[in-house]
Length: 396
Image (cartoon, rainbow, N blue to C red; front, side, top):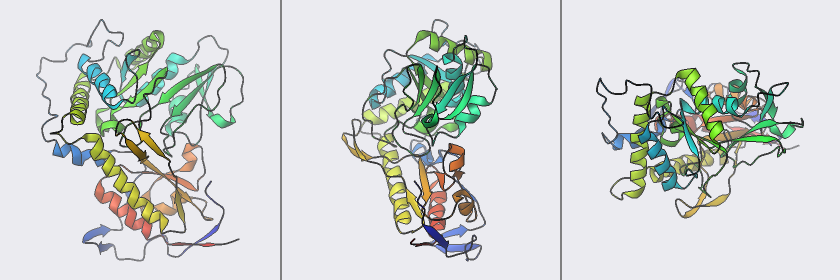
C-alpha cells in the first residue's frame, strides 16, 4: 500500500533555517509545533465570522430549568427545535432519510457510539459480542469500545480478519476516517449488527450520491458545521426499542444533553439550511467545499513534487446536492511514505508537524492521518514544512 522503494532524506530532521524565516511575506517560527493530530475544525471560523450575529442566542435566568424538553417524546431531553432543524437540514442536503427514524441526541457522537453499543448488544449471550471495523478504522473505536470494560461488548479488531461465528457489531464509517474512502460492510455475516458512522457524509467532504437509510446512523455537529465545542451529535434510529435503550443510556450517564448546547446547535443548523435556500446568504456548503478543494489541490501539488510521499486518490462521483460531478476532499489526508522510512509520524514530528500514526488506525506506520481542518496560517506552515522534506528514491 505504501510502497517498498528505498528512500534517502536529503536534509536533517530539523530544517537548516533560522528560527524565523520569511517566505511570501509570512513569518514562520520553525520552533512552533503544528498540531494536525486532532480533527479540530477551526477552519470554519472564517465563515462564521462572516455571519456576524446571525447565530447569536440569549438565555434568560428562568429558562431551561427542567430536565425535560418534551416529556411525550421517546428522547425526552431532545429539544423540539433541534429535532426540527436536524430533519430540515437532512431534507435540504438529501444525505439521510429521517421520516421513519427516531432521533436521539447525544453529547457528541462519542457518547452516541457507546449508547449504540449498549443498545445493540444482546444481553443473553455467554460472552461479550465482538465489535469490529475494517482497517484503517477510526482510531477511537477500540478505546471507546473497551474503555468501561463492559460485559456486553468487546473490541475484536479488523473486520477483514474477523471469522468468528455468531453475532457481531460492525462499524461502517463512510466516508471513512482516516482515509476518506466510501465504505460498505465487510464481514456480511447473517448475524451482523451494523452501525453507520456518517459524520463526514456532507457536501464539503464528499458527493451526496443518495440519501442514507440504515438502521443506526450517527452524525455530529462538529464535522458538519465546525462547532466541536458545543458537543452535539445525533443518531437516526429505525427501531423504537433500540432508540429507547440509547435514550436510557444517556439518561443514566448524563441525564440528558445540555439544552443550551442543543438550542445553539439548532440555530446554527437552521442558518445552514437557510444559506442553501436563500440566495442573499453565502451558501455554507459551497463556501466550505471551495475551501476544502483549494486545500487539497495545494497539498496534492506539494506531494506530487516529492519522491517521498503519496496520497489516497478518489473517483469523480455525481453529487445530487451540488448537481455536479465531484471528487472527495476529506477532512483528513491519509499520507503515505513510498520509501524505506518505517515511521512517518516520527519523521514528520522531526519537522514540528504532529500527525497521527497509521498504527492507531490498525494500519501501517508508514502512513499518517493529517487534519485538513486547521486554520489557514497553520495549514500554510504545514505545506511549507512538508516541502522542506526532500526525498529521493533508489530503484531496486
